[in-house]
Length: 164
Image (spheres, rainbow, N blue to C red):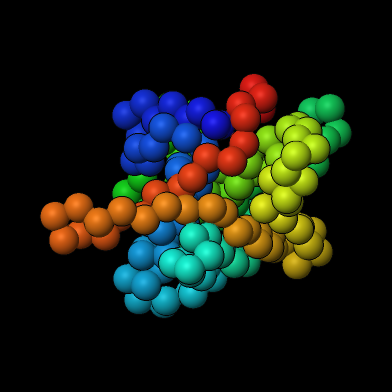
């Protein structure tokens, strides 16, 4: 499982997979409540397959680090009350969500599991530097539970923590 330390931040989850799922749901809920309703993210839960599919086209910003490396970060196109904390360094929800998916993808690349080759390709990120957009496609495993008449959805960890 890919550990996640929430600290005192908005995203309270104990796994990286769970933190990404929470961030996506918060972002989709925020987009639906915005007056402009940007509808950049779609979070769809499938009970039969026990997966969540995330499709997200987000504005990005780019800059060059002192060593010449290209830096890509989220362009915070919606405003929210968001507190960074623990493992999340970004100070806004859009940037934090992109940060979490970048970490998931980095862990997928760092993990080598010949028993489960699919675990290395659940998150895809593509950047269009000219258009300043990032496209995230993900299909993550989830679990459902019913407690006291309420259905809960939780992310199922699929990655080993590799210190990324």
